[in-house]
Length: 586
Image (cartoon, rainbow, N blue to C red; front, side, top):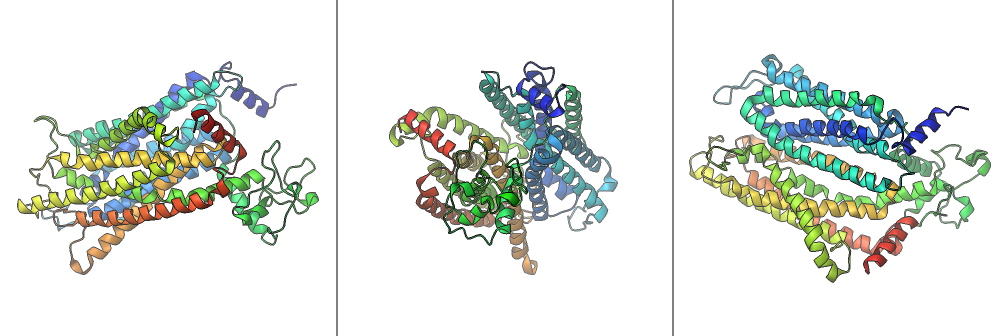
């Protein structure tokens, strides 16, 4: 008898090294596609506020709100893209749709730079006689942002997993090493792509204009689409098998449907719906109301003859319930990182850098949009220094294989974020006073006798703060979930970026509206010499301090009530952590 399509697919997934499909030969196609998408999309972001304010006659505050919403949409759609891919269309189609969507979006954006009819008329020399963009003109550029966001939402969460599909070979004893090598190369390519984006693409925009600056990303997306589709006959295209997020929704719905059940009663282990060969015999007592979702009321009604649930929206596995509980446990600690991410995205920071001396030599000047490289380099150097130098030293005193606990690293990261934001407030106060004393209050384009190196300490501190807090966050999440859910930490981080962008846009909008009331000059005025960006930075610093106190409260609560003394609700995670502690002599 011939194999069914499902059996053939399973064979390919388990024997990719010996088949004509999958294997190492497919990885260059996937990595090139991902790298081109990253370079193209990240290269648009640093200078985009300059393009919108100059060619669409928006004030800086409104442009900042728009770009934050764009960032929130891109990150939010990553969760949606992963859900659609895992549940319905598969990773191959998701990446294809995303890449083509990004290509169309960048072509539309490129056309706005080529054809002036798509943009409003430029402002007069006094910047007072400005024509607002029409609805049709705004629709064009907003459609380009939307298409690029859809592309990012489908490509980014699927590319790394799609590459893993090509290499997975359960019969290969070196499979784990092969997979580790792949992940290292993949994430290295992502880091290199972002560095190229905020240096090379930004440099092209500054020195060759917007038509070339937007044309190059569009050409990169043509290359991405071409390379990805050329490799199509070689790929293993696994069918969708369902999403983790579907399971979370099922638990919530099932628990609500069975809200009449009294969870205070003592049920025997046989009353709970368990997965085959499961180590979890019954749910934990945390969030007891969710236990209703896995209680079997009537075996004849709730179960099929083969033992499977008749309706997965009415009866869930014990494991599904525990995953939902882990998710709820993680949320308070996860929420503490949001304000740190908000403080990173200070509005109008590029306008500050445009007013200072950015020359390294007489001939070379660093583009204002490329200063984000300082944060990336600081983050990278700190992670390497901490892992290679500080961990061996600190582990002697703390007894922890990671040097410092996850809570300590998260807390230090939040504290450094406060210091960096306060430092940015002081730096802006100095810059603004120099501009006013030099008579440039009405000339925001004037370059001051002030080095751009003033901004390096705060940008470097942001990198160290992010390295400490975000790595600690991800490790904390990993400690609660089994290995099969390792991608969940990345999904939560992406959700944090989306929420931080939304909060930032709301904060900017509120501050601009309140401070400009009654005809006053807004703190976030496009002319930053007349505005008070330093006041906004101090406000953000205050909010970061409040967030730090909230973090301490969450730490205390977590320490007091952390799963009744257990690190995880899953036995296999407990066993793995105990083994690690014994191995390191903790």
